[in-house]
Image (cartoon, rainbow, N blue to C red; front, side):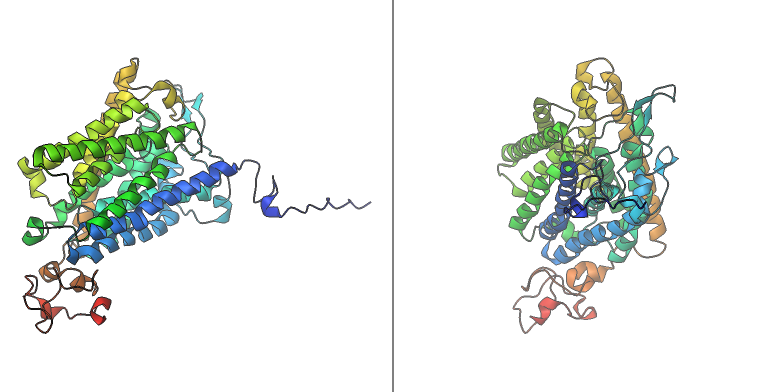
Amino acid sequence: MAASPPPYNPVPVAYQGGAGAVPVWLNKGDNAWQMVAATLVGLQSVPGLVILYGSIVKKKWAVNSAFMALYAFAAVVICWVSWAYKMSFGDKLLPFWGKAGPALGQKFLINQAALPASTHYFSDHKTVETAEITPWYPMATMVWFQCVFAAITLILLAGSVLGRMNFKAWMMFVPLWLTFSYTVGAFSLWGGGFLFHWGVMDYSGGYVIHLSSGIAGFTTAYWVGPRVKKDRERFPPNNVLLVLAGAGLLWMGWAGFNGGDPYAANTDSSMAVLNTNICAATSFLVWTWLDVIFFEKPSVIGAVQGMITGLVCITPAAGLVQGWAAIVMGVMSGSVPWFTMMIVDKRWKLLSAVDDTLGVVHTHAVAGFLGGVLTGLFAEPELCALFLPVTNSRGGVYGGSGGMQILKQIVGALFVIGWNIVVTSIICLVLRCIVPLRMPEEQLLIGDDAVHGEEAYALWGDGEKYDVTRHELCSDDTSHAQKYPSSGATQVV
């Protein structure tokens, strides 16, 4: 006798519980939050940092700076799904690196998310201490969430070399640095590498993203060389109001940056978002007050720097510390990077010799290192138990193993610093055998119109070639005007 057909279900397959589109392991709330968090982080880059970079530089570099950020975002997306995701979060190849492979197939992407190297064992290497990380959403969500973190890291790095790096060299630099530097930090600290299992705390990227981008950016700036002398001496923002718009997107987007890293919409996520805003606001105020006290003027650009250092400093600690600790970290992040940028940078020959355009070494490397060490000091045991694979983790102020935690944080930072200096230097040395790292002098004098044939504003100003029929005074950037004929869309207007 033939079996009777299953009863008719009027609910579409996409909404049926236990069906292909809604498997039993899927938590729709977690999945929705994780995709929103990924979108918020993506908005920090596009358009957030695209706007910020395009407006905080001199007018003649507005297009080039914004385009460097946009190009990096697009290039990282393709490299990430082609090979870099699995190098960062896949099966273990080396203690600090995962096995490369594509993240493009349906069978991989619609299965439950899992980080295969993250199972943590006790010292006998047999008994499981913390199970493998398996969030309640598909791998596709995890791949995209981690992708936007990788993309913003390259964009932050770009801030060190704005205003002179050869765009062709940048096009080659992005995939190389992503492959040989970012993936190592991500796997070591997040994907199940040796620092992850040792218990180094990096809640949301103080080391993986900010320390690495700051050190690598400074190293790249060393090898690329400085801007032209005139740009180093005077480099005013071309639109301060748009700087604030980009900074605002960066600040609000940090809710996804830190709030998405528990991989769930849970209590720890809420704690991370609140601490993020507490620290950022405190740092913003401290930096502004220091500007008023020492320079007698509150600087908008300075306040934005203080906001960024606060966001960076709390990142490794966001869901691991209490609110009072977030305030303390804000005070530190608003003062220590201020001191290194305003005082040390001018007195230490190494810092003053390297032309770090936006001071990324201060706002990201110094603030990221500071945040990592303070995490080792203030991490609260109960909050650590909600997130970390190593049980009984705690900060130094809570006694017990807390003192050892500070040492772990310092060692983890030194590994990230050392790896980035060496690998970034090798990449730059290899690239300069293929293409010049720095633009030719003719392009450096003119800017966007020479490099891209486009300009940010249809107005005469710094960087535009002198036209005797339109301008009464000669621009001081016109000595090579005839070599690069006007071709931008703004010139047509």
